[in-house]
Image 1 (cartoon, rainbow, N blue to C red):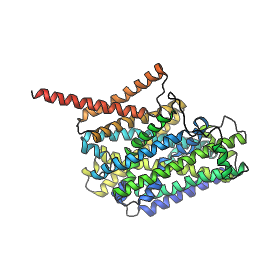
Image 2 (cartoon, rainbow, N blue to C red):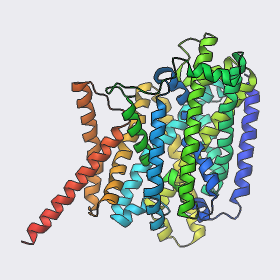
Image 3 (cartoon, rainbow, N blue to C red):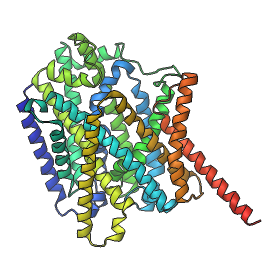
Image 4 (cartoon, helix red, strand yellow):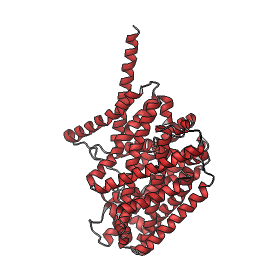
Length: 489
């Protein structure tokens, strides 16, 4: 694969993004940055959200899942659809009714300012770690296969990537991202389909023949009936549903685009169309994974090049230059579309939830200056996290960081559920105590189940966290009510 050609393609791709940013950010203001003036076309938001959901990690990892877990990931995808139904018809009406810019404003309206800050902090921790880790993995892949050929160090590669994303989102924010993510989603989906086509050509068959081979292979199985397994189908279904509710419905990054749509009805339409497209694209990812493994067997790549490195290895070293270019563009598109939205959402949450600047600063010009300064700070924070991941680069630490999401979004899910399903109120100090204590409880439960019963808790640790948070909040509510009654006897 010619590194110089890839570099030229990369430069042209960046030019396209900045051109889109220039065209969309003219006359942009703070409302454009936060919510695209609530005028974003729902169909563009639905389509562009695919790129935000399917990040660079998804792009290289989901095909790699097929080698060990077959098509069991489809049960997670079905759970996703159930979760999107809950978001569309339970959470979105609440957000629109409260007319929020940040979804954590609902917690302030329902409980108090401390609850809003608690929700925002949980989001900031989760999204900062998640977005930085996803960017780190993508840069590692690109560094290994492309950038190292030019003598570019990892830290410089990281700065270049962050400056690019920072540059085209700084002025337009969500208004720009709605359009750039549409472009990037198109590139990503095209790269999947074209790669499958070329794999079929290299295996001397057509796409229909390749699909028959995938569906008749040992890789094609969907149901795992072992209850103790992490891939037990019920676990995956429940996990998929609650992961979606938490990491989309309670995530400022994902909801910020939905709230940029003018009406609740169109936002709900966006969510349901998006869920169907996402399920189809996830299925294509799995087909690609099966195709890659069959091709790896066909050319005797061997077990060494499996998992995350399978897709780039096949694309760059075992096919023609066109396939390498297709993979490269798809990976860049998936990486940028996941990180640009995170950068904007983190900036929004800090500006509104933690600092409450729109209420404190009435000058739009001055607010814009502070908001830009905050985005610079977020970019710097992401750079520091990526370099920490690079310094501590081993599988155990990365697995632990992926698991952290279950421990941070779980309390957030429990807090929102308590606010929606009950009419009780909790003081801010108690909320902080519960949020800090519930992950410790769920971690202890997970260890006990694993040690004493050989029962492995996977992604469903998020649900365990949410349940413990809900129960603890309810206990505090009952205790406070009892104390109130005793004081008035």
